[in-house]
Amino acid sequence: MTTLSLMVQGTTSDAGKSTLVTALCRIMKQRGLKVAPFKPQNMALNSAVTPEGHEIGRAQAVQAQAAGLEPNVHMNPILLKPNTDTGAQVIIQGKAIGNMNAVGYHEYKTIAKASALESYYSLAEDQDVMLIEGAGSPAEINLRARDIANMGFAESVDCPVIIIADIDKGGVFAHLVGTLELLSQAEQKRVIGFVINRFRGDKSLLQSGLDWLEERTGKPVIGVLPYLQGFHLESEDAVAHNTFKKTETRLKVVVPVLPRTSNHTDWDALRLHPNVDVTIVGANEAIPACDLVILPGSKSVQTDLSFLREQGWERYLNRHLRYGGKVLGICGGFQMLGETLEDPLGLENKTTNSSATGLGFIPMKTVLAEEKQLKLQKGKIVGLADNNGSAAHVEGYEIHSGVSSFHKDIKPLIQLESSYEGYISPDKQIIGTYLHGLLDHPESLEATLKWAGASDTEHFDYQAFREQEIQRLADSCAQHMNIDELIESCQAFVTQA
Image (cartoon, rainbow, N blue to C red; front, side, top):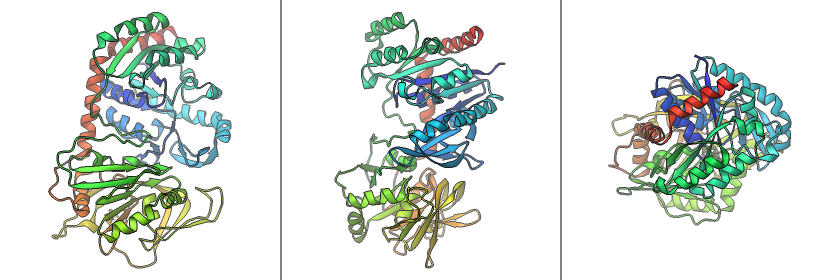
């Protein structure tokens, strides 16, 4: 069987491209097809580590789960991690090659595209279906030259495209018609249909608009997907603020949103837990009282630490700890809790030999090194062992350039398979770790909740919940999309080509 490819593009960012690819991965898998997700270029601070130690976008790791596959570096060969408003770390096939500004990367795109195509064809060799996710919108006129994220890539691999729009944003018909109109005639012919996402209400009230859209464009509406109440899928980039129904709150958690917050899925298990109330605090917002503060990961630790100080977090943390509160630092947040942060090579700052004073809660020095640590890890949280010495199982991953060292003996938080990791303070009020995903396993989640002061909480298995939500999404899409028509249209496009 010839590999069938389909690209999902959107009228805007957050139109539903990632969720639709996730759903289609699961649907195709359940139809007995070998299917793989692919995104040529992803700009996100939320990343995942593959078993081989490569870095890819978090969304592609979720899509791999939906397809029943291990994450693979070829699923997202180009990852851009913004570290300033005009620049980003460029990661090609899982390895960072350096920082580039927007102009510099635009010049580099021709080389990057070759890597993307190499990954695509390598991955497609063993698949029945390739589901490709676009980025942003294909109608970004200023980005058309050397495009490798949308139509430029679709043309290179000669695949059909469907365009998804979010009706919840408003103006869905203008979005779809306008996007199509801004494409070239050759690109318009590549579009085989539309999908409308997050619809609320009676579809019959939308029918006249659908009929008009099909007549106006000559393109079929393949599906109208309903708004899924309480739906959760790991976010590709934007920090999720939505809340979920709580049965009885036993722990209050506060998390600051940093300008360069990374891997914000670290607290999703808490945000979804029925007994935990999580408050996300943005710039210039009041910081409420809480039981636990989580300092999250950061792509620009020194800059984000300055932001925290400007926002009054240093004073807040001192008071919080003085009154018995708990603090958890993850990755960049862990580094901030130390005494010094040094960037001798200018990896995060343009200036070499940049140094900053940390918050001083941990006797630790961190130096940024050129080689990034990318590892999947398993172990036991020995620092939070119960009275019988039993320690919870933990699974996670490391993504960091910092090398941390302690200038006095400390108690580690986690015993890994061949080493120790992290820190727990003598008074047990502060813990720090490089391990992303610390709270994803039910054992480690329960141990952390008990440490933070929440006992007798309901059992919550975040991993099982994620799987349940992927299946709920797939079932909804299978019900509200014409999958047979979609497959037939893809096959017809190949035949015509």
